[in-house]
Length: 72
Image (tube, rainbow, N blue to C red; front, side, top):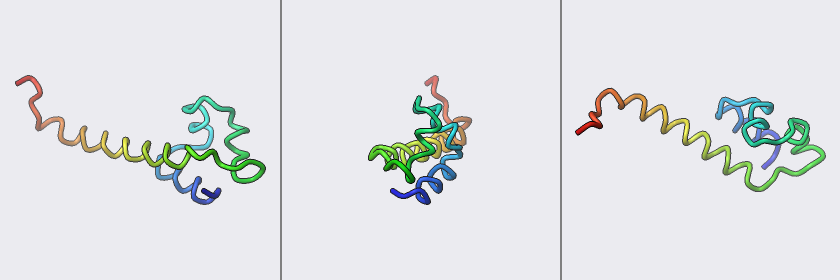
């Protein structure tokens, strides 16, 4: 992954680098150095892709929730 792809995934996820760093419990400076003085950890791309998918699934669930009776 390169810096451009990372920034695009962050944008799709609706996260800033600072928010991402907080979620993964890392220093912002470490996250900010990825792609320049440090390589991206191998797990970052799949983590962001899964985060994006989870947000999409949550949107779908919220959309259909009023039409589903879970008490039966």
